[in-house]
Length: 433
Image 1 (tube, rainbow, N blue to C red):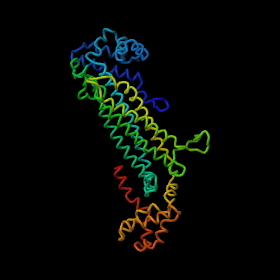
Image 2: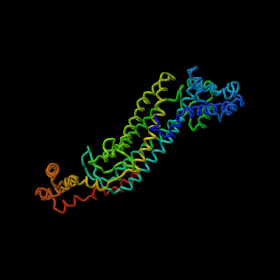
Image 3: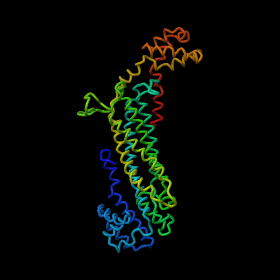
Image 4: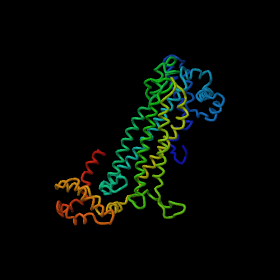
């Protein structure tokens, strides 16, 4: 989590001051619930709320932790300095550190998810707008990096939209799954804290009670959360890689917006490099880097150990901050992406009609030629295009074996571009509804 790849809305979620504020709210709400149950005096619970406007001193808490070697105890000690030690003597009654730590972590993850959901919605809006704009902009489809058959730029954007839309659905599910809290005591049995306390705290913090916890909330929830972020990062890289390909000089079907005053190279003034999408490729790797540690955090000893703790202190902020930045960069790149329709047509025609080979193959088989012979006839004419720079239609019209099965008019018809785009509206209806 470095400033270069951070946005303030997301970093604020992970600031120590935010964390301590959430800790405070959990303790205060727990005190309210305990007072309602008659476990602690109401005046003691009310006294904790006197600190609601306090700016907790992070440096002071760190100072106390340097002695206690325990972050939650350090915070509770600092809280007592504001509330008064006698008034604060019932704070954390029956609770364990993980009740505070795990519930807070999930509050932070749900807040982070809300920002990421908004990011995804911006990406989807950008993809949809560009898809509609270029629904009928014909370009060559490629497989293995080689010309295949015609498609449209709109379909390219539409397929990325559909992929990101699935990602958004997964993210919403992951947010729902991670939105649990636990105030269940030392080993999750509620021996010293009533389940009603947990229910009250969770309601106030926008969570629901964990079905069953030990001393910790089960980490399979977190594994799914970070795995979801990893999948979204891969989809982001999928889009970025396509743009990087399109911006190659010999392709140049699209390129990132190049702003006034921007410079592409310290050595070569002519350069306009795909720096944003290359950056997105790298950021995707950083996001995915958290997935395996999150999966490994699922396995803990008995009711709890802290092998997961150091991992989550890093991957929680780093992964959400990085993906938040990356998704906003992705959205901006899509919104400003420069498209070159004429270059798309020029590229498609580079091999003079070769991309229509399947239509000719199918027409020959429908005319009674065996598939093996049809393939042989089409391929031998296609190879002249590859190897000699010939024109595919001209070669077909000069091939007596081909014209024995197909008339010149039938051959000509097989080069109609509209044939390949006739179902674009059907696909768009599926994607956008």
